[in-house]
Length: 146
Image 1 (cartoon, rainbow, N blue to C red):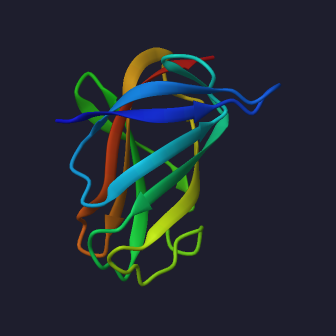
Image 2 (cartoon, rainbow, N blue to C red):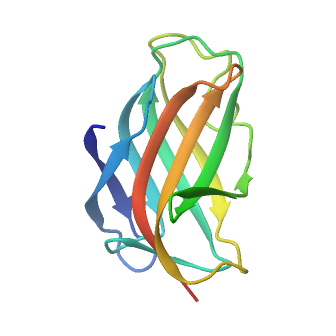
């Protein structure tokens, strides 16, 4: 797996950016930048019940008629689904059908479940096409706290 970098920006106070290592887990698109708000430290500290928004700028390398967001927390090697709003990645800054070579930025929000244990884990974010193939897939470190 190839290690890349994820740009994180904080919403609270003055906006600052940090570079966070992430692992591409099989993207068929080219990721240019990823903003996760709010997050201002490494690993990203996620609070239970709080919503976090991601903005992903990418270039499509395949045609796609539909795109869906999928988010998991990887706990002890087991992917646990996290609810994503919206599930449909089209129309949230992404024009579908998505054309090869299109440079897009889409926005989606995920809320950390209130009933999970506090722990360090890996977050896995995917944008999948109508055939279930990953247009975008990356894994990044995070910590869930109360």
